[in-house]
Image (cartoon, rainbow, N blue to C red; front, side, top):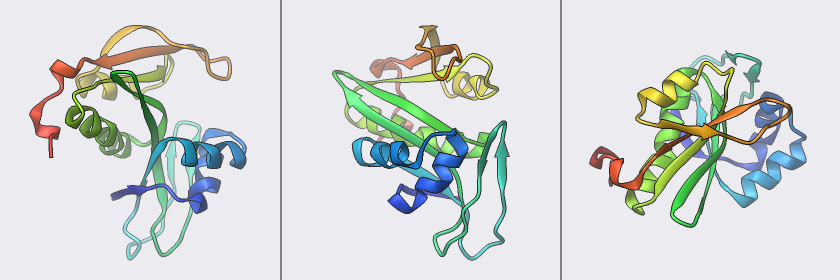
Length: 156
């Protein structure tokens, strides 16, 4: 697996995984920092199921198996959306974490309360800090790492 910047051509795979219109996904790709996890393009094509999310896209650049979208506001990097299997999520969340560390900013992520990835987020050093906004009728929880608590292992 490798991580790269999202392209407009990744829009179909991300839209299918998030049940959002492709146009909304394309806007997200243009307005935020979006990274995708892709399989080795020379390896076998495959499909990754992560709960209800399904990524399937075959190209010379590999299959899209996950994504993360984030932006910065004030002194915080906000992860606004992500999906994928556990390994992809860990690698993808490293992207905004490195950015936050480099810029001495806090990092915050919102996770649906019924999502199994909450344990992954906790294992990565995020602490639950309260309720988040409702997305598509789902309750969310906010997780945060303060700038002072980000480790040097993510500095470049």
